[in-house]
Image (tube, rainbow, N blue to C red; front, side):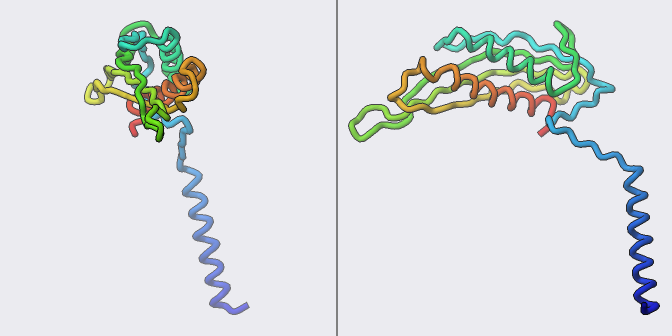
Length: 176
């Protein structure tokens, strides 16, 4: 083997070894749930019941929303859920649940109907008050006007709830 080539390969091996040793001391942390919480400072969360104050009502929606909201924090964080005075506090209300014509067919009748849901959220971070906010989160879904609302309502409401809950989670603990 040519001496220059031997020396070059020896340098590459040395660099590879140094790189490998430096990575051993590094801690790479990646969370698939997107939460970025300092659990040394933030240990608990209070999630108040979100009442349904929308003018158009569907009975199961309030409990579906509240269960989904508490579930996401239970499943994707290590925060202890407490009844009051949590390090993080979530409160609010469902402010809108409405359906409206989205498009009209050539015969002049509605072709698509849009279902819309909005939730007003008040977030308080007792550890870092600069993160406090009050904000409205919304989602909507469309369905064909040949379908009855009763036939698609539960599925569409759950999809909207899931979207809104993800938005709230990202805004409160994911820092996106």
